[in-house]
Image: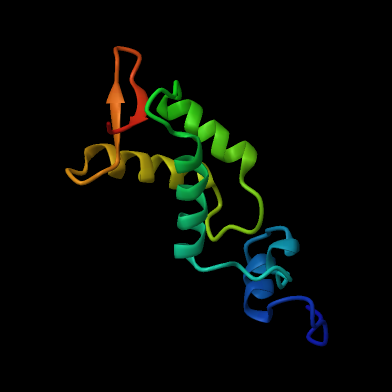
Length: 111
C-alpha cells in the first residue's frame, strides 16, 4: 500500500486491498454531490413540466423520461427511484397535485 498517494482515501484503500476489491473504489471523487433536496427538486421540476391535464405518461414512462433527461450531478445513484417516490407521494397524498386517470393509469394533473 502506497501511503504517499493523495488520490486515494487511505481507509477505503486498505479495505479494498483487504477484501480483494478493485482499488478504484477508494479514489477521491472530484465531483461534489449536491444535497438530496436539490436532486429531488430537479426531478420534481422535470416531471411536473411534462405532466398536463391531458398527458399520456404512465409511471414507468415518467421514470424512463427522468433517467434519460436528467442533467447534472445527483445525490442518488439512480434518479429513477427518486422519480418513483415522488410520483407515489403526489398520487397517494390527499393534497397531491396529480391523479391516475383512465384504465391505462395515465398520470395527469388534477382539474
